[in-house]
Length: 363
Image 1 (cartoon, rainbow, N blue to C red):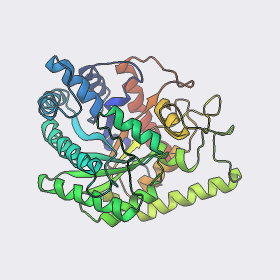
Image 2 (image 1 turned 180 degrees about the vertical axis):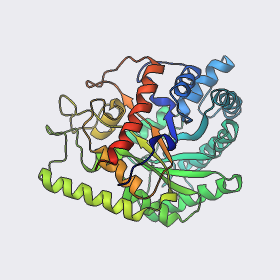
Image 3 (image 1 turned 30 degrees about the vertical axis):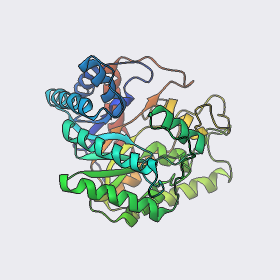
Image 4 (image 1 turned 90 degrees about the vertical axis):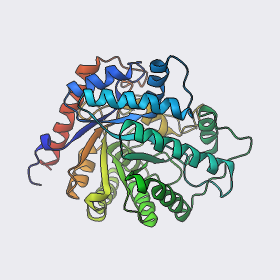
């Protein structure tokens, strides 16, 4: 692979990823991210909501659209002050697949329209949509947390054509404003946990304003890693066979997805848990890889073990030279929390992205 000038690749940082468990105010995060040389952010909805409550001096709810937009305009001003672009608003989940005519589907589109209003306020043209079909307890808890609620069991389709149709409908709502959807798999989802499946859904949706959010952890952690085994890798086959299967998947990625359909690459690694994570559902309803994702994701070259250099190279082999975005949830090797200094940590993250890019050229 020819040399790549890492300084030419734009770098973003997810606001939810600066301080896992430490409550840094959003303005502090923006200043640290900017000082480290990042030029964009992924604006996490919880950060916006917390900022809105602080900025407006009252509790701001998840659907308080006017208040969230008012605060969003101030976030836009702060980003401009810090020379930061709001790359996208994230993570919009539990959207596609609800039964026609259900109150869950009605709520999903109501939330979508609210988030679209927020996009205009903060000045971004991209919405991250997550494939988040999980086991039922996790879905129910997600609804309780978001104050949506339902006494009936949610009925979510796993039919790819249904998911694609819903995604296309959302894309059509967004298109007149010039807005885009970046679609991401989460490796613990029960539906579409791989890059290949979300790409299939995006192809079936067939809209110019739908692309992919690829993620080094979600691919390497889903197709190679396994936090429930002693080795930390999938053990249904021997290591040689596993490596071959993983490389074949990455080769297919590099030969299948057009570079202009990759809207960003999210960057993180994973710690191998000191004790294998239980295969049982957690109290929060999350599957093992979900719990792993929430607390055991450091930046590259900082204690992780997944084959993320190979994943990054596959993405670059498509010709993609767009946004590399740091999205990490670093609770330390124990997953119980890790104290950081924001500016220092953000600078270390920026350097690790450049190191990652350079590592791909030596393969």
